[in-house]
Structures are given as structure tokens and as C-alpha cells.
Amino acid sequence: MRLKTIILSSVAVLAAFFIFGWIGYLNIGHWLSLDEAPHSANAIICLASGNGRQEKSISLLSAGFADKIMATTDKTYIGLINKKINKNDLVRPEKNATTTYEEALFLKRKIIDLNIKSALIVSDPFHLYRVRWTFTHVYKNIPVRFFYISTDPTWAKGFWWDNSRSRVFVLLELTKIPYYWIVHGIFGLDHDPAWVVVVKRWYERELMEIFQGRRGQLIDDAHGQ
Image (cartoon, rainbow, N blue to C red; front, side, top):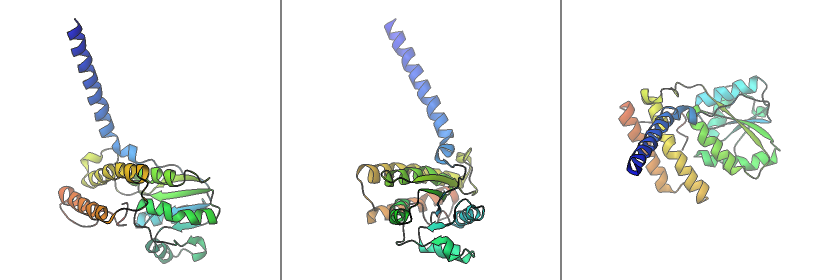
């Protein structure tokens, strides 16, 4: 009787593990896309440096949600100027960030100096979970509230496994998120070692080759590292 109970219990646990694991697998796209409705804020932060992020930031500025856009790279800053945004409505970065973590880190001095208490952070939907974790971690002792606003790229978060582009996005984020937890969260490193940058670029190229049959830059901002 005891053996039967153990067997039935084990089967139930394995079934539950499989069911919840499958549900989690199907919903990864939704889990990554933690976007929010825009609110009035002191600034809009346009993460580098895709055209979609710039366009979304401009639409938020035009709608009156904030009176300035903060760029995280010179490429983004110049891109916004080329889209006829007045320089008085822009905040130029002091340093050029090369990763999402550096974007949050390099903005900190500007956020404090300009007395920013709230900001809309614009990025692509698949990137937002990592963006939220990063800014929460970097600004944990600073009284500023962030709202995470999604662009509208072609990406199937509900059926991500059935779209080659979405598969690449998800697989990239599922490796980068635990990397951020460990390297930036546990070990407290502010920048990626040089060998990590090489590995990241290799991994991205290989995913592109496997799922899209081509090599090259995954997203138009060459960013999200």
C-alpha cells in the first residue's frame, strides 16, 4: 500500500511539473513583455538605439507625457535630432553605453542632477523584463519611479515558438537574464569582461544562422547586451 502511494504521488508530482513547465514554456513571451501604460513623468528614457524605440519616445513626447527625452548613446541622440526633435527637449549622454546595464548605470548622475523622480523607459517588449530588473537593481537606493513602455515591433509573444524571429529574441533573453542575475546581481560587476562580449556576439550570430538562415545583426539597435 505504501509503495502504491509513493508511485501515485511521484506520478502526480511529475505530471504537475510537466503541466506547469509546459504552461511556463508557452507563456515565456508574455513573461518577458512587462510593458505598462504610459503615465505623466519627468522624462522619457530612450534605450539605444533602434528606430522603433526612437519613434515611440517621440510619440510619448508629442503626447505630452514628459518634456524631455534622455538618450543613452550618441547614436540615439543624433537619431532623434535627425527626426527633427529640438535639442532643448533632449538630454545627451555623458558616456556611451554598450549594454543595458551600462545604460542604467551611466544615466544615474543625470537622473540625480536633473532631479528626475519619474521616467518612462522605452524598449522592445522582449527586452522589458531585463530592463526592469536592471533599473530596479541600479536605482534601489534612489527615489525615482520608472514605467516600462513597449515599442510595437513584429514579434509573436503569444506564439513565440512558431516564429523564427521571436525564437531568437526569447533564446537570447533566456541566457542574458540569468547572466545579469549572477554577474551584476550576485558578483556586482558593472561591466562585461571582454571575453563575454565576444561570446555574446558569437551566440547571437549562431542563433541567427540556426533560426533565420543568415548571419548579421539581430535587431536594428545592435544592442540589448
